[in-house]
Picture 1 (cartoon, rainbow, N blue to C red):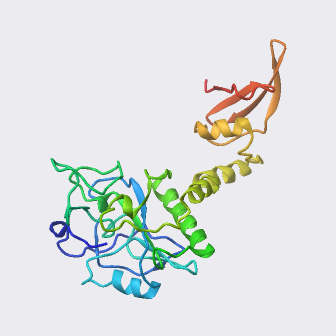
Picture 2: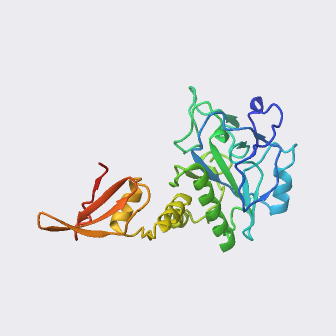
Picture 3: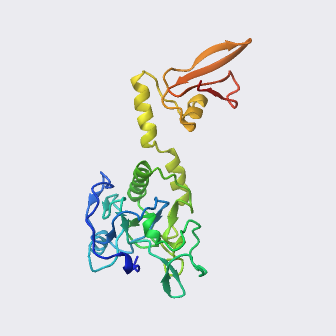
Length: 277
């Protein structure tokens, strides 16, 4: 978790006004870079703090520690935020190779980093977010910690649009630095369960669509074939319930959405059509 690119840290800028999680305790760290140097967020990196929450908070907010993270999730489910997600914390560092920290890329072969999303010659802190977790790497997460981590990841998704894929947009710290962080965040993290649970949580966008549909008296059944198709294809909000109609002797089921009409032959919902004209 050491900050090593001191060339980029001339002074501590004021924290940005947004990017703060509403259900996290705010403990501002002076250790960050303002913004993301023009980069979009590519991944969230999970860490183990190797310590008790209060000790870690003191370390991450100490201006002499040269380290920080965006969040820590405690064993009791509490979430603390140190750096706005619109700014860059100092948790994910440069890539470690042969006993020294290196800028990814150029003509040097990387050792230890397995993540394929690295941008040559750019510090990963600029395009990743970091979540610490209270405890040591051999600990199993408490149910409260697991649920809080899940809620936090969903909030980050809602703010950034980041869709989680294991080893791509959701990483272990060891995937950036297997040389001396090979056990971070530890062997007991339930990665597959986490990804599966994240896909089942309602997103902010889906919640907004459901709320808008309710204004027209329409329920949003995401398991229905026409609804699922319309949501996947960005057709706005439903304006009607499903309805039946006939064409050339065949029965069809249709539904009007704000950006098009979806329909399929009754019983053949594997072949769904859309008309936007």
